[in-house]
Image (tube, helix red, strand yellow):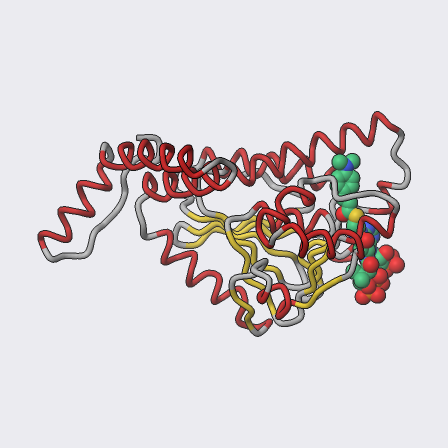
Length: 264
Ligand code: DAK
């Protein structure tokens, strides 16, 4: 993993943690951070030892407070295009990462920051976290998939209310509408997220990848197509060492030890 200016990388027991690190600007996304984020995701995908990724923000105030408005305001159309492409590449790569990704939202997750959380597999949040898509207040709309991922997750009308008003909602409300899985005290957010991440890291790479692929592909398709994706993903699992190990361990009455090849 390369050294980054705006990201901190950490690895423990198969769980990688990537921390957005521009604390003076509440970890806002500028072009340099987005480019580093894309690179980091490529490095993580290439590293077979990483089983789960956790994303969080530096400091106790923000996960990511959105696009860097200071930089955004200076963009000419070509720079805006480049920024847009960088963002879409990064968020697409995040959603398609073959390992599970958990967002540990430790404060403001606004605009692009909320959209990053939406592209993760699920979200844990601290009690002081705030979520929102405030782009409407800047005369723009969400540009990193928020108009698409938010309604798919919480429903069309709830999403429209958040997008049209640009209001922020606290973690407790985000939990009620299904944007957040768990709300935790600020000082236990990372430890609890790591606990879940480590438990997932013990599972088989092939089956995790297959499950993520089936859920993500299937929820964007009709039921019959989704079930067809599941059929193939299931067949892929059965060709893996992990399936032999998992079923064998059950029959032998022992704990399975999964270390199968992710690309099997
Ligand atoms: N950008 C730049 N700096 C930011 C920032 C941001 N998004 N958010 C906060 N900061 C900076 C503040 O300017 C301040 O800097 P100094 O004045 O100390 O130098 C410092 O962080 C601390 O912030 P505050 O003093 O404002 O802290 P408060 O606790 O009073 O308020 C806040 C926290 C999060 C409520 C407030 O900072 C805030 O409203 N921030 C802006 C939130 C926001 O509107 N975010 C942008 C959403 S729009 C695109 C695709 C996607 C996007 C754009 C284009 N394309 C496809 C082209 C995405 C757009 C967005 O994300």
